[in-house]
Length: 605
Image (cartoon, rainbow, N blue to C red):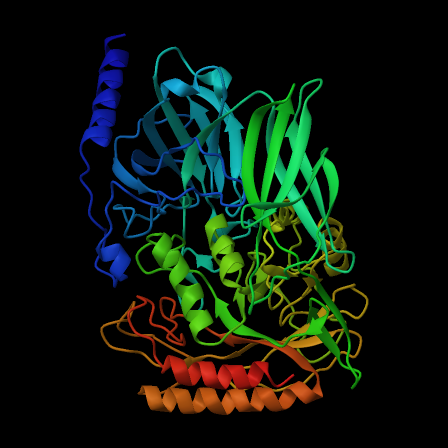
């Protein structure tokens, strides 16, 4: 008993340190962004994390948590190793820890929180933006639930777990095998090299809470039909007998249309169409009403836009946006940061890469084998940036037979473990359901370069069943199949753009090219082993190569290319082929010159 009280006292003392003093500094000595250098650990990612569905009352749990690293088989652990700054992964500099977590280890988190007095009598939801990879959550010592998957939000109703009083604890046990198993992990690897980067473990997006009434809105999906000038809205809500769900569409605060029900179709006269040149957004208000009184209300948004493909006068399949052909051209965006790894240091940093891509004249970003926080997609929505969304891959190409130059590979079944296949389908389903609400996403990309590619037709069928309003790039630079049902045929070539394989039945795109490297001293992640597909020594040389490739690409549009992705927006660790350095401090080419040549390419269609 004495030992128990001693541990309880130590735990409370640790919480007191966490709540009253912040002793934090970045870990390691790598390069950092300006935002990381000026980070205030008492005010980290304080913006509302879910802009597509806003409630006014909420509580942010980012900040200093206590942590520990133990063997994975330990059933419980005191978080006495030190403090970690959430939401930065434990391996990152901004976490203040900078420690590696092995596949046979567990990472533990714990912190104390209080509930506002005004939340009494409501249901309390605990939200996690993303935790990589397996998370078991405990509240006041009771099991709240678990989640598998490093890229999607999850939440638990913790109301019935809360002990008496205002002071409570939340605790997590996290396990992440990274590349030692079949879990989706994108570019993460336990021993980084080349195009494979530092592993990310644990909480890497905002943790937060909100109160909701017993009857409340859980989620919604808005799907536009510009040909009919209609918007279909499906609402998932917890309703009691007699409750009414009300949906209101607004433009600049003025009501455009409204209807009652959980499945409604709204007429949208005088539509404002969303596009990169005119990213018009409509506001949505969804309420639960009982006897004329609003019980719950969320504020969201949507857009009127259409994505499809059709043949042009030359017989080439083209991507159409709002019934007009648009050449989509943008950078590969890996979404990595030298100080935060998966997590941007702040919201301004999260926005930075999108704004720069827009300034450079691009109209599209390919989000490469990573999924971002909701605010990233919201920024794309409001700025008018088209997004191609990848699924984070499982294995690397060493597990797969590549089939670059022929259709119908001998084998595609890289992911042979049935448990891994089932998990891939489950996580991909979660990724699509979590992000199909964002108008900016126009293409789903389940596989890249054959990394973990398996049962392609079945995965495409699953993707289509979850969302039939967007195009599917079924295997970006991977194993190609004539009967898989995908919309886009996507080849890769480095460094220059070429068309070596053409599919008359699909949209043809160049999913990756470029990779022009320029290592800039003082802005490098490492002193040696830096590489690009080709390397130059100054900005003029880099731009000359970029312009040459851009004009080659423009000439191939007449032969059938309908979109292209340049590698890449920023340097990442040992890769120095970015348009911007990894620390975001140097843009390697003149932005006006880039915008001019990129506009020439986009207008080539």
